[in-house]
Image (cartoon, rainbow, N blue to C red; front, side, top):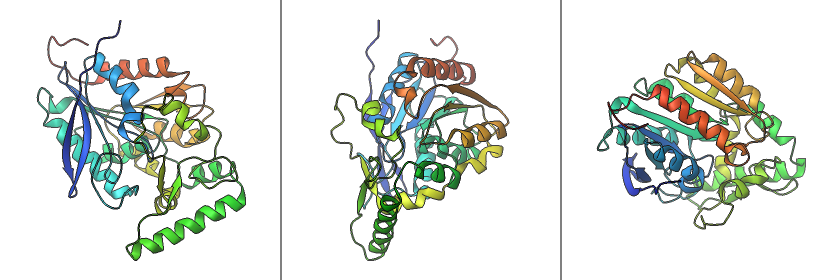
Length: 306
C-alpha cells in the first residue's frame, strides 16, 4: 500500500533568477536534488521517481531550470549550458540548507541532458554524496550524428536555418523562435528518433501537465548539439550510478557506457528498451536499482527508516 507523499513549493536564487522547486521533506536526513531532461519541467521529468524516493524516506528537491516552467528568467524557453550548471549548484546549496537535511547526505539525480550535466556538476562538487545519471546525454557530436540518421536532410536544414535566425534575433532582442522537442521525421523538431516520439506517452500519459511547453528556443537546440559533458567523467570522485537503455536512439548508449567506465566509482546498470524505458516498461527495475544505490551511499540519520 502506497503512503501519501507530502511536498511544498519553494524557491531559491540562481544568477538573479528565482528558481521554483518541489520540496519533499526528508525522513532520514538526506536529500536528492532532481531535474528533468532537455526542455522538460520538474513535474513530468521527476514526479514518478521523486515520489518513490520520498516514500523510501529520502528528501527530494526537484527544480525547474531558469527560463523554464515555474522558474523566473527571460526570455522564456531558452536553455544555456552555463546557466543550467549554475542552477544545479544553487539547487544543491539550497538542499544543504533545508531543515532536517545533513549537508553530507545530498545526492543528485538527472535524466537525459540533466544526467549529462551531472558529470560536470559532480566534477566540481566534491561534497556530493552520490549522483544518479539516468540515460545521460553525454556524447556530443557522436550522439548528434547518430540521432540525425532518423531525420530527413530537408528537415535538418530547416532546423539549422531557424536556429541561426533565432540566434541572430537574440542579438537584436527578439523573442525566441521555438521548435518542438520531438517531431516525426520530415518535420522540424529537436529530435525525430523513434524513442523521442514517446516523450508525451512516457512523461505525461494522462495529460495532467498541461502547463509543460514541449518546445525550446531553436538557438538552444543548435547550442547543445556539440555539448559533450562526458569529458568530465574522470574527475567525478563520488559514487555514481549510470543507467543505460540498450536500444536508446536519443542519448547514444556507447558514450554513456564509456563515461561510466571512466568514472573511478561508477556503477553501470544496463536495461533493455529505448530512451524512456525507465518511465515505461523498465520503471520498477530502474527505480529499485536507484533506491538500492542511494541506500548504500547516502549517510542517513541514526535510527532513520530506510
